Image (cartoon, rainbow, N blue to C red; front, top):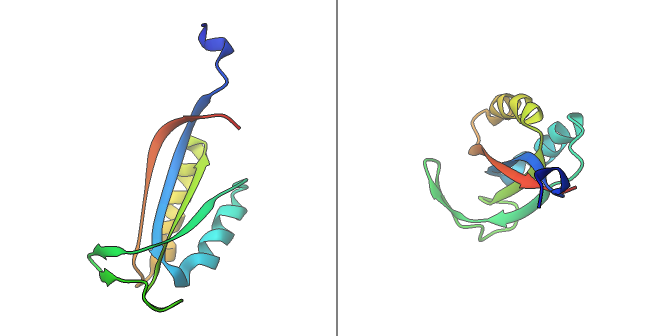
Length: 101
């Protein structure tokens, strides 16, 4: 099968793990950059900001947000996420992927 017939195209998966308190700010940032969709999950773990148990709704909890965007969009979104971090726990990373839309 030729590559020109492939239903997938190059894209970037951006994964954001942050304190739940940052959710609305992160979603607004993504929408400002015309992100067409994202997935949010409640997560728990341990890292440089301590253990996140997620044992009380809205307190000491983390979310994971995943979205698929262009490389150019990720180049803009990642630095802006860093600005939103402030004193909160937030990490973001990207992977090259192939996706269909």
